[in-house]
Image 1: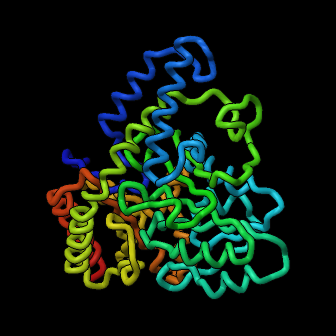
Image 2: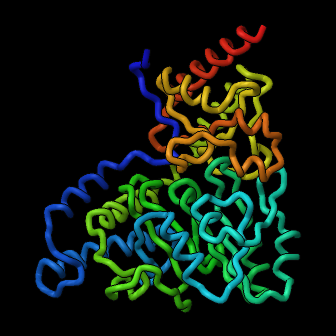
Image 3: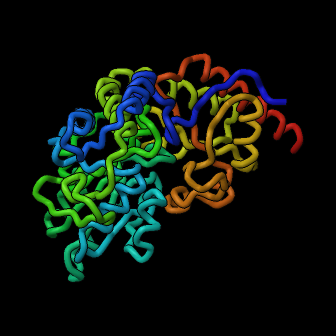
Length: 372
């Protein structure tokens, strides 16, 4: 029997669309102008795209001209990894599949047991004589929430004449994100992670760099991404970006809820393990394992109780497989197979945490009773 109460704790997969973004999309849908047309309707559409570009740029502290709108974070990652030819590609072992699958033969940098990139190993890879490198390292891990030392990596990469791409889709609205301060060359962000519509994203590219287009045709996005702009999606993305820029203040309460949730879950299940617990993390993310209970069992049981979480990344067409992130961290397979991800957001309440702990505790008690 499905529970009547619904508690959504899968914000890293998708943030609920903000009402302001819904309104912006609906309003844009009522206009028929193509942003590339020079008549009145086209100019109006172009103004809306430009306004959204300014809002997205302000979110990460760049100039509007450095924003390339894409069809989402995955496309932006692909564009970054394939848009700078004549570079050997180096990626961390814990990157999102949209990075790992693009260049399957890329050199992979190991991470430490806490999920943070091994800087010494990266430094050794950068000193080889194989030519300039393009390094791709995520800002924050989508499964564990572990923050990476991006500025430190940038210094290493630039000292060897390389470029640094940062997949930062999990950062905006949760922690301060400044393109210049991080000193990266390209950065990926996504609309639906901050309350905008799905199918929207952007690659931020340092102004003096030349980016090779993957989608060729017209001259849209300054020749870097052809195709008529998705006006409703871009406008909705801009509306969400405007709000996300001011959302950092709410992160303190989100972190309070996360800390409280972790404490109570571990009280209920003393043998549970929270991953990346000893490093700086996103304020909203918990990766936790209930030993001897498969992740799929936990996700289904919690869903039946009305609590929605995920098993690792939510990008595998509904499949539940062992996390490559936890594998890279050296977590034992038996434990990794029992890990779920709980992610909070601006709409999460104390009552939601109560519901999570109640459902988790009930499942834990059932599994331990049956094993007795």
